[in-house]
Each structure stands twice: as structure tokens, then as C-alpha cells.
Length: 136
Image (cartoon, rainbow, N blue to C red; front, top):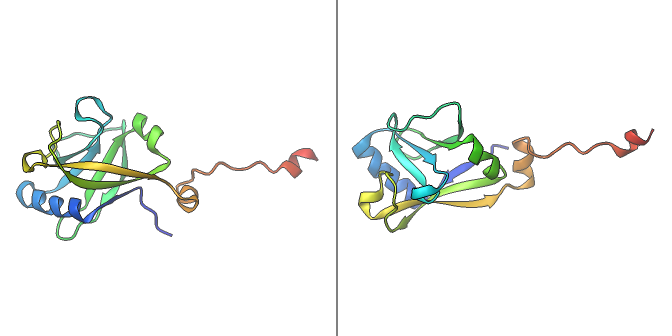
């Protein structure tokens, strides 16, 4: 089983293709809130610096462009680690510096809880103590 923590909708993939044609390779950083409202922010690679305080969630595979890495801060990841994220595109302008803002669109995160299989794949199911062994 191959599991991913993050995916992209066809609408968002189309916007990424347009943005990559103009801006080159792209990346996302899932914002933690404040003025950009917890939105996935899209930047040209190298414009936003990630570091040891960020977690790489995965890379989006979009036809015709380089993989788009998606990052989130470690502290925020602690709240989101049990969820699968999908980057979508909706009408409306966000209030951040994400590349799609001038297009009258904004990227948005949709989330769902990880399935039992995904939890197991990512090592998030705690070991259940063997009560029979504990009693002997």
C-alpha cells in the first residue's frame, strides 16, 4: 500500500500548471493561521525558506511540471498528523502572498481523517499492550 498525506484536485493541478509556466518550480507551505487564514500558500521554489521546524508532507505529482513539495510547521503538524489533506482551488481572493491571488482564485485545504490502514502505514496506531502477558 502506498499512502500519501497530501493530494491535489484537478482544478488545483490546472492552476499549478499555469503558475509553473510563469514562475518555474513551485512549493506549498501550509500556513498556521493569522492573516492568511490557515491557507496553503504557493511560492516559487526558493522564495519561502523551510527549515528544521518544518515537516515535508509529500510532493504533488502534477502532469507537465516538477513535483510540488508541501510543507507544514512541526507544531502545526502535531494537530494535523491524523489527517489527509487535499489542496483544492476555489473562487475568491485570499489575503496572503500566494501566487494564485492575482487570478481571483485561492488554494484551500480540504481534510479528512486518515483511515486505519493509513494510520498503520504512517505508524500512528499505538501499540496495544498484551494484557494476557501483563497478567502473568
